Length: 389
Ligand code: MRU
Image (cartoon, rainbow, N blue to C red):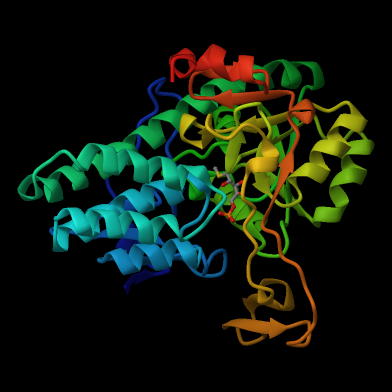
């Protein structure tokens, strides 16, 4: 994997294709005012380029993924992250493997390697299953090109679905804004453009509200230990949306004080009964929102819904390395990216990366097909084809 650009706005000019809002209202996302996706095919090469999210918000740099191993490493190390983007990167990972050799064994091995990278986001497994089902019946001689096309299609569909989530979410947010004259939202983790191909899930309605001229402000929770909230602040700033970063523990106070009109988060897996797995800390926000009488919305595309998973208890929760708690990452006094050990090496820590919010605390699910109650019936009303499955 090679670094191809560092803090150089001109180096991003080749980032194509950009996404176009079907409604023509919401702009696709920008870096330094240049329309940008989070993953895109490299010019004249079977490779993809990504934004290295481990360096943000301090440094903007892009990386080239040229092999299956590069793609697996990017997902595991969270150079790419967020459920939809993990799925799209995995699809390209399969395509990169088949570009080397396109036999059945290579396809099966690529799927197995990528499936083992991260356990909770079901988009990963959804994308791999789709690639395998599409590619397995093809002859090896046609697979490499077909895999590349299919990965690109998955990426395009993700951008279009997120854009639709934005428009449907706006319909829920507009009445709140009209009642208050201003829209104060709260989000957790990063479920924005950086977590998808474009637009985001939880942030897509925010961008749609901003594009519609609503006076929107976002409380961004820091999201310890990996601080994905800082990514949210970075992308909201790139887009010009007003926001304030808070410590995770400040969320309850702001909700209780009436300083939040709605909480909106993404999801890594939605079970068939509407239970939602998302970044650890989401559950506490849902509890506080319920107590404060504030709507709690979850935005996600179809690829995040796991109809085979009966409820939240069946969702695997990723346990990540303890050093994510023991070590903090940021700029030192000399402006160099550094790690600071805040806890001694041997300190016992637990680092579950996700939690489960029971469906009863979710006011509505917002998908590319519209909003629904967080329940089996609600999901099936939007995806009736799953009734037959
Ligand atoms: O561990 P991460 O950063 O991949 O977790 C991301 C989240 O939990 C997001 O909220 C979720 O994937 C929704 S992304 C649109």
